Image: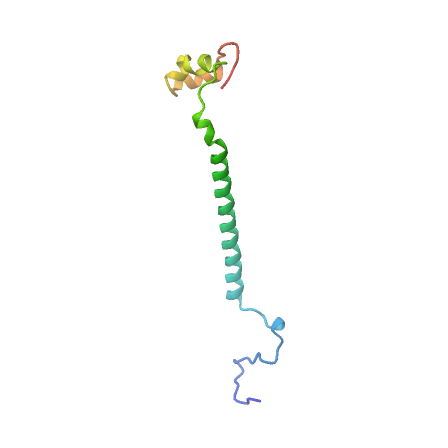
Length: 103
């Protein structure tokens, strides 16, 4: 047995590993690592959802207007054709057009 060990030095060689308290710095690093892993996982899920949504809706870019009501509500509607203005926003939320109210 080493008799030259000072009181400040600790000999952990005979103590089972599960009984040794971990260093608080090591514990905080482990928490930061878990937070970092969680952040990476969340980011990956968000990116996957974004790409999936864009892929699902991408084909609509190639669709034309339908002849059912797009001409009346969009193409020939002067409030829509003049863009978003204060007056068109007020009109959209207060008036009916072709018997319906579509804000």
